[in-house]
Length: 267
Ligand code: IPE
Ligand code: IPE
Ligand code: MG
Image (cartoon, rainbow, N blue to C red; front, side):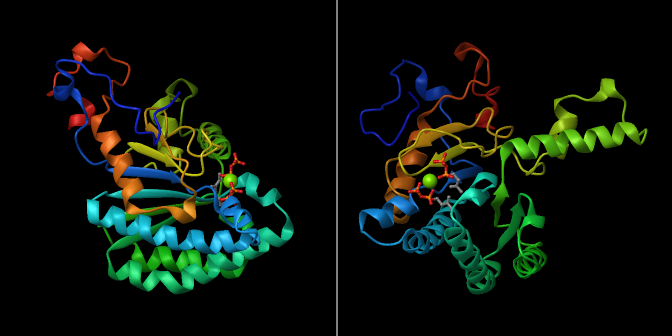
């Protein structure tokens, strides 16, 4: 079972474990913000109330990243599959996104946050797309934190789009079939300009990836918590970071090969 927010899940004891642990904050954190609906349902309230409460947790998570010096935060806000939810919920979520953009962009810009969106933007209404474009434009030179919001995003769709782009390059004579490799794919994937996520957090108690960053999470450390997204607090995020700091990332090598000077995660 993957490690999770469980006090019993301690790292394995070993004599030289300390020398090979990550022991630093992740540069890139990826989060599935799950549990809004259940949070509301437990209070006998409409699911939308949970989404609204969830918006507050987004701010808390951004604050935490800024305080910790995390350089990139990628949030899963709305999946390709979430379009299939009841019309009323999808409509209410769209309103919430629009309001959040109207409300939050100025302050995020002031705090040095670069905002970007990944996913199929053309599926959103024009008014929302305009706000997304404007937020990206306004904050594009900020470097303190890169906030990527995955909206109408699916990992499979991301991979298919990269394959399509490479196929086009081949048809146009810009690329040879034998030059299609992992690096060529990677340049066409979402978040290609960022290091892969170091740490993935999912709230809400489910242990799955739900079509989030399938390609990019290949060697990401996974961490799960029962905490529902609207109940997120800094202490929970702190536990995730503490657990991450104790992990040994081997990237397919043996533990013995990971002298501190050659451990990619200790760089
Ligand atoms: C996550 O919360 C937010 C979105 C998918 C938009 P959910 O709405 O999935 O909440 P649960 O999982 O039903 O509790
Ligand atoms: C994943 O949550 C998507 C987002 C948080 C935006 P879901 O609630 O859609 O995932 P499943 O249906 O539980 O796998
Ligand atoms: Mg859910």
